[in-house]
Length: 169
Image 1 (tube, rainbow, N blue to C red):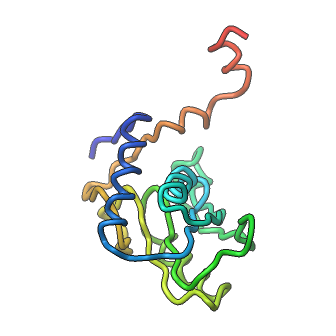
Image 2: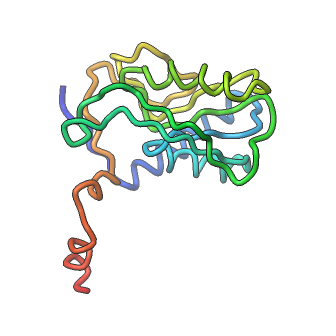
């Protein structure tokens, strides 16, 4: 199982291809909910290209061992959006399904909190082989469950002083 390293260019290309996959399915949805933090960039792009309102739901399961070990899922009490999300069909966006537990828990939680929502479909870039859940839309299936090094992770261990050094400020 080799780690997977993803550049910014590749990451952006994958999000665009995910948008095409959702579009080609012909499914019409009313709003997008992205899972923060990993799904923020995915949700932002999908919201823009589909011209749909975006909600953000904070979840966290990778809190141990400097963010490399999964633990119990925590789902925020509130969905953040500029206005209440419309409609009965929502697209749930994230970067990946790892164990699948987030997807398994978040979909029923959203339906319980928002009874007007009749259908939620999920869209992710990567689906790992260990996942107990299969997202409705995904680009890459990773049967060996590699650790994915995403381009924004460099900021996990960086501080403003590091940026000042990088930019000579």
